[in-house]
Length: 95
View (cartoon, rainbow, N blue to C red):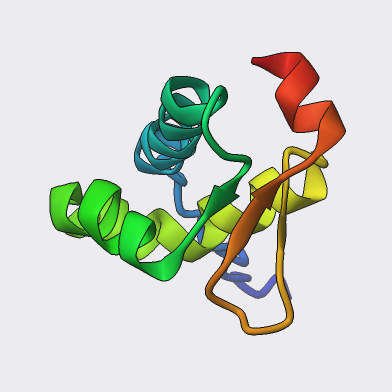
């Protein structure tokens, strides 16, 4: 006797949209590029004024991932206070 077996349905991976993350990364890079001659440090006020106030909902959700990606790539470091961002030599060379 043959039983009807149901096929195991594995849910498809949710497609991740990397566009908002890349847009946020570009915002950080553009800020450092624009201010490279003046400073290699982005303060909390700079982040709020130049990044946070310009994010849409999807970009806001991608902010942490974008910052982590930039740190992992060696573009910038986050100081111990967790609010100050510093452009690395590798990051400066990439601009």
